[in-house]
Image (cartoon, rainbow, N blue to C red):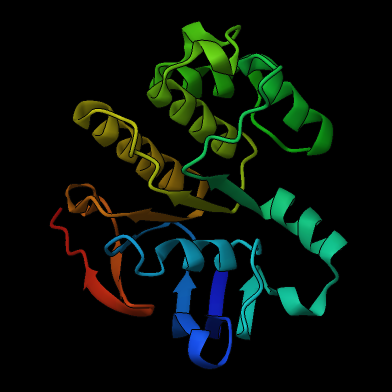
Length: 229
């Protein structure tokens, strides 16, 4: 069974002459241990796809199913609980709480969700992301790249079954960007999550199992990566 499935999902904004089809009818599946890239130019519908897949936005038509639960079948309060339990978001805006240091950002997650990483596992994650020395820094003291790495740590810390990352390497230099993709790949395989990375940087797709391309709201399977062992 797919962890995440979109069934004939479509999203439109406006009506009449102002109607915009941000996402044309789309079928999509992501299974355990799959690292999937979604590529396309700015304005093509990548972020719309990601927010619909994560239940942050409601499709105009079609159905989003997460671990067997159709989001349209449950009320918003239960959808919010499902998102908290199942989905880890890495958005372009880091969404860090300004008055909490990095360690406190993680502690807040422990208060609202069970089953998060233990101390040793979390410390290994911080080291792999190069933020172990930033735990007592506040967001205002972090660079753009450091904020992005902390945001990635927050998403992975909760052990979600789905990771949705919107341009997760946009604020990182090339070396760190490849490291972050390596970490996402490792966590995807180790934890058997379904990880979807939206990016315009085609250099980052080599470690992905599948690549989808969005053009003007139309999403199609672009490539299934073949590897030799």
